[in-house]
Image (cartoon, rainbow, N blue to C red; front, top):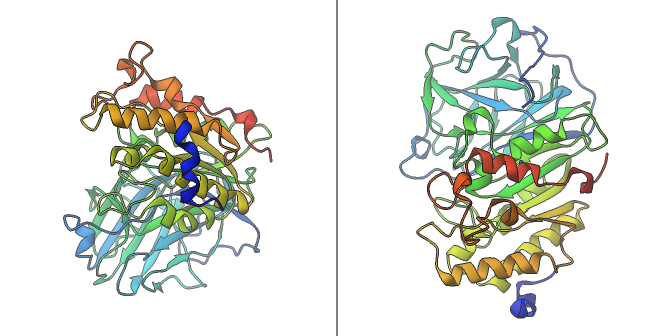
Length: 407
C-alpha cells in the first residue's frame, strides 16, 4: 500500500415510498434463517460521546426508539448494536422491530417483532465490541422505514452513539419496547447504540459505503426524511437493473482522514477497517473526504496520499473505489487562498491517480461558474460550505451508475 511519504510526487500537481411488511410474530421467536451472505443496508458510524451529550453519563432504565430507512430490502434482517466506546458491559434487555405509524414514535401493534441474539431476547455487549442480532425472517421492502426499540436497563456508563441522528430518535423511561402509541417517548438529538442493519435474500448483491463528513452525514439537508445525498443515491440504485446495490453511510460530521478529534470522531484511516471493510457485503467505497483535513492545514500531497492509502486498502479487499472531488467553500469562514490552492491541487491530482477506479467531480456540479471558489448561490445552505437539498440531489445524480460494478 502506498505510504504517505510517496505524496511528494504530487508537488507538480447519494424516494421510493417507505413500505415494510412484517409478519405478526410479536412474542414468539421469529423463524430461523439459514446462514447466507448478508449485505449492509443501513449504517451509522459509531462515535464516542462528548461531555455535553447525555450518552457521556449513560442511561438507567431507558428505552430507545429510533427510525431507520433501509436502502435495499430482503427476506430477513439483522441489527448491529455497538458498545464500541463503552467502558463497561452494555446490557440490552429487549429489542423489537416494527412498522411506523406516521412520522412519530407510534408503531403498528400487529407488526411488532422481538429480535434475539444467540437465541436470547436479552444479551450483554462487552466493552469495545458489537453484537449482531440473529437474522429474523421478515420481508423488508426497498427504502422501507422501520422503528427499532431497545431497552437499556443500565446503569450503562458512557454509551456509543452517532451524533447526527438523521432519522429521528426518541427516549422513554422504563421498558417500553412494545409500546404502540409512542406517547411516552420524547425526541432525542443523537442515536445511541444502533450501528447497522443487514438484510438477506434480497435483489441487491453488495453495498456502496460512503465515507465522508458533514455533507454526507446530513448537514444542510432533511436528514430526518432520509434526504442526504447518499440516501438519494440509494433511491437511484434501487431501480430495477443490473446494479442493484445497497447504500451504507459511514460518514461523521467534522470527520477528518488523518486526525481524530472530540467532535469529529476517529480519523478515517483509523476507522476504515471497522466502519467500511468489516461491513457485510461491502463492494464499493465512495471516498467523499478531504475537506476538513485541508481546512486544518494539511497540504495537498498528504491529503492525496491518505486518500490513496484508503483506496488501496479497500481495493486489496476487492472493493471498487470511487473518489469524489472536494466541493468549494469560498464563502465559509475557513476559506483562505492557501486552502483553495490545496483543494484545487487535490482535485486535479485525483484524476491522475491510479488508486481510484472512478472519480466523480462533485466540485463541477456544485461550484459557481462565475466564482468557482464558492458554491453556486442556489445550492448554498447559507454557511458557504454545505450544499442544500438541491445540491444533495445534484451530487447523487452525478454518480454514473453504469460505471459501478454490476451484480
